[in-house]
Image (tube, rainbow, N blue to C red; front, top):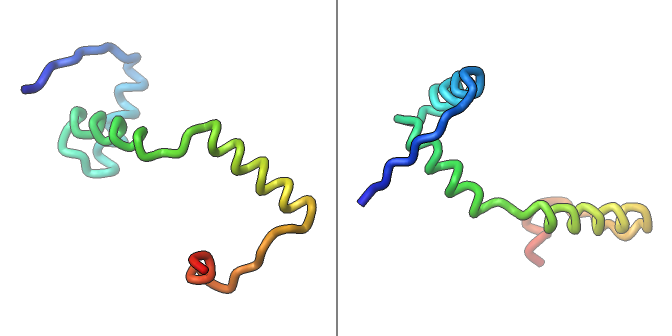
Length: 76
């Protein structure tokens, strides 16, 4: 069963959304919004991203970075 949710946006924002829908080939606004909601669940949190960035910055400053020749080296 589906529920309908209505909300209003400034005309400029609505136009930008329509451009994105067309650019990325979504069939409808609903499909695009569902995609964005699903995408949000797969993204890394802002806090996790900041922590990873801070760790990488510390490793860079202390010359503890590792050099890999290929992505395959990451698994070992």
